[in-house]
Image: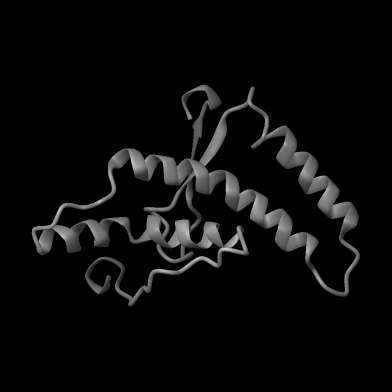
Length: 128
């Protein structure tokens, strides 16, 4: 982790009762993908995940992270957010959850620990 990301980066555990924490786990795995791959290679061990697994993680993360953002907004304390939540839900329904529109994939390999905006790549729903 120090060689690639110049920081110590711990992998996260998800709480089974909090599904939105899965987004944080996927984010950390995707950021640390290359260091993990190199660590397995260093010890001559087969990496248990494939490129297809990485693609699936990116696709799932791109959906669940946006749903998680709605959840975070809805749980705001001491502020009136119901109208904002409905607006964001409608936006989510008409973009990410609309099977007729491409999904904007969030590619995290270029984004190291939130220091940059992640790259967005469109992917049509029929190839997800």
